[in-house]
Image (cartoon, rainbow, N blue to C red):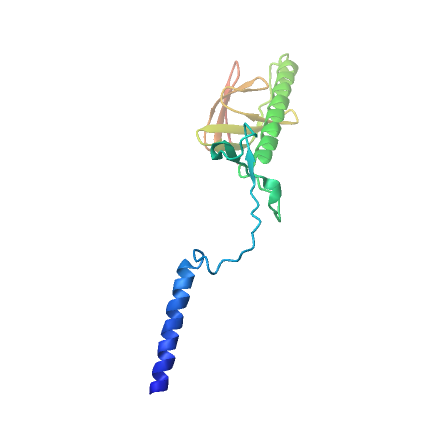
Length: 174
């Protein structure tokens, strides 16, 4: 029984000593090594370099080259993809405008103008566009745009109303 008490007391004392060393071990001067640890600072001085004791003049700068990455940083806003799509839309609009201008001049002399074929209706929010086939070309048009001699009056869910000088037509999707 006495031996058991000694083991329990020594275990409790060891636990207390290790707990104290764990909490205050860094502050105890007896346990510190005398080696000077080389601390690498990535702070660069800005302004006056003559007085390096002043902490007010030290500015910390993040240097991305000092950290290794397995992959390059990703673009969170996907700006490359958006710029590509914007360029395609802009080029498509320029092509559409030149095509409709050519069609206007080409069909002005005819009195009986053909009606464009409706391929689809696209809606994004409150804006709608109709996809037509006219004269062998595919044309995107919104309300007020001209497709040949026809003007797009209104665009519904599955219908598009066209008008020219003499008549009105309602095209429906099949």
